Length: 395
Image (cartoon, rainbow, N blue to C red; front, side):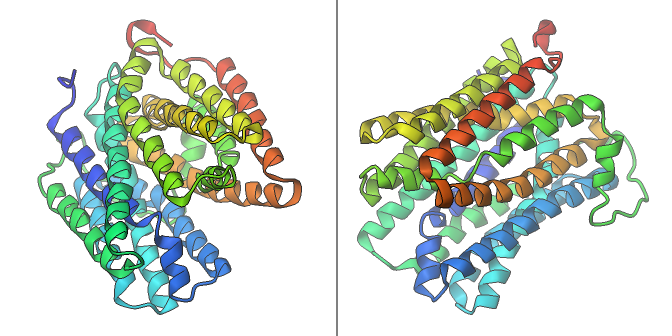
């Protein structure tokens, strides 16, 4: 079952799992911690906006840098190191400027590593195993999203409101991830590094030079992202349905567990029946979940919808990157993935803002309904696209 998973893929996936464990230990408590040190809701929004914009814009730039230099490992190591040290920084001082710096360093680390890391994964796969490799990575990464909140819940049960110590504890899996990156070896070079200077926004030139198939797929993915708002809105809906805070957290862990257990087998299925087919099924699952969230109020039904939401994530996250990888040249792999990831981050910011406005103006039912309907339209768009050639000619 795991025979096509190389040593490099195992190591990269383990690093992602450890880093996500550290990040997800803090994700549920970060808003409460920031409020406890005097941050207003507006300031939290500005903080997250700047942090995500930093990650989004830097992904393409550092992906291009990785391709130009012909190196992957240094970008992966530096990216995970910055994310690791940002965790204890959040607890050392409570000054707003320092908190902004720590959060930005965390997101900058993500921007530095994403393109190079995903290019390494793609280079370790064959055209017949890209879905499997990216699915395995997503499974391991999301396993961290199960362990992180579980550890945080257990810790806060015994030490309620003791947030600073939790930030120091989150440094431990992050540090272990950094040490694990030291075991990575640079892939064999197929070309020498190129003496080309890279401007911060120069990766946008890749969009003009990329293939028509790449642009069509990315356009569809970005339109979908514009209607795929933060999971926070789903959690708010669960809370409004009458679930207690601990149950809401439990549902979030349940969703990530479903995602983690499903991503690898769905990646293998995508290699067999086609990346596009599995991705479209994932979109229709998303539409079903959002339609359900618009009208369902029974807590037991909410739990079922989060199960379907985990299947949606497993059918789309890794598969979309595998799809992009099949449409990109090896020499520009990090640029291609980084360019997409960067634009996706920006669209994700707009999506949450748009959903928030619709929710405030027209209500939650309309916000979820619009997202669900728009996703159906995107699904039809992808259905009409030519299929990437997969194993045995599968679409």
